[in-house]
Image (cartoon, rainbow, N blue to C red):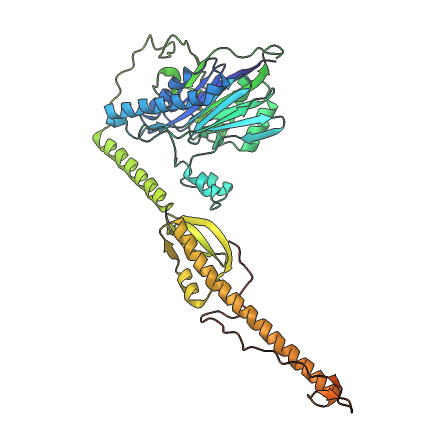
Length: 484
């Protein structure tokens, strides 16, 4: 059995964007989606560069080389973006997400950076196989917000990782096993951010042909308001010798990559008319001739696009300011994640990562380690300090603080346990003595007329009452925790 792909790709500008900053590629061994960012003359360039750089990988590679091939191509694309920004600072701030899959037989390498997504429908199970590199996803991972809250969070589009030419590319790379009958979906957030996973699953399971599936998925995003560019690839894993329909063979580019990185303005397109007619037919993909490094459509030879105007200085400065502010916020957030403090979580002592503050309603800290030390059982000098939080220069320092608190807490526990044992011994003694006196009428040794001892009074417990350390909150407040 020889596995192959049967695929289709579509990219649509959506209802609110003027141009398409998404790019996509689908070939016999490579699938890729990139979502550009940076606005006019930037986002579409970044996504087109990423796709064009990866397109050369659509070849017969050994499974052992898939990951390194993707990693090398991504680093090369990032370097190209760096060189472009260095040569023309007016496009600074551009970047792109990238989600790509590279096949060799039944092995497939997955490369992912940003918030475009890849899903797999295997049998009746539909799963997301990428992890968003966004601020809100990190908040979900830390348990600070729910997935439902993430869907409407005002900063849901803030990326923590992307290809931007200003920092080292850090994509997620993994190797997967492909199985006959699997169906893969790669898409930009113009689809996944508008259409629910339940609807994606239902559509992919119900629509047989990949071409029909991508058309319907784009239509669903348009019906959902089409607030962003919409790009998706649907690919079925088939047996090349027994499949009812032949595997796909042509290489296809879509979106910004299909016209050399120039934005596609859809003035009379169905997507534009959707404001009036509520219907659209997504733009067709462009078949790529690998001998032509700059894919063109039929109008390229008839029309010459006038030179693009440079951004006004004020706009450029504004964009630069926004980039600096966002970059500063991100670096500040990263700085907070190297800070720790000891505080209270659910009534117990806990180690927090970050700083005990919030910005724009977002907490800059989260619980890193929970303990079972109840604050109510901690000596009063410690408890008052913990309520005000105790800063630590590192995780080790925070753990040292918690260990000292634990010792004080356990000393209180041990002292109250010893006192309970002492008091219990006293109670038992008094009870035994009372019974002895009641039986014999006194508390002396009982003897027969011949002097033989027949009973002795209960012995008095030895020792003195244990000393309770200063500040211990009282026996009722101490628990029995000793773990971490």
